[in-house]
Image (cartoon, rainbow, N blue to C red; front, side, top):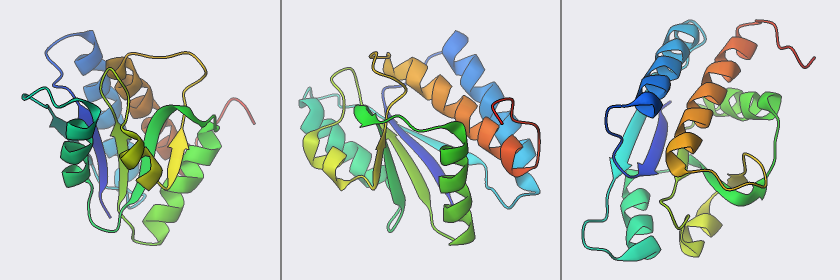
Length: 155
């Protein structure tokens, strides 16, 4: 199993990158004994200015063949942390790769959004894609702690 975050844009040094690295490191440590791999982050950048469709093409190339594709999209379903945990556990137990996709400032092209197996939203507000990466990394870590039997304060 592989877990990939495919995202438009390159993170530079700063608070967001520090948070993402911290949460993904925590995920790796917590997930090791659970059969969860380290998360791969694939960053793509459309240097030619082709817009969402060009970004969608670059993101598509980063998706492992046969992977369960989860798009972070403001129009997606608002699911709970246990729901995210369940999706990760099912992918792991089915030996299926999992790929989260995060678009650029204009979002994800409709063609790629429709290809996703699941579209999730972090709420009705629009978030900068760099913060969406931070929130996703935190949710991955939270999922690993839930799978490990750690306390979940909402149950």
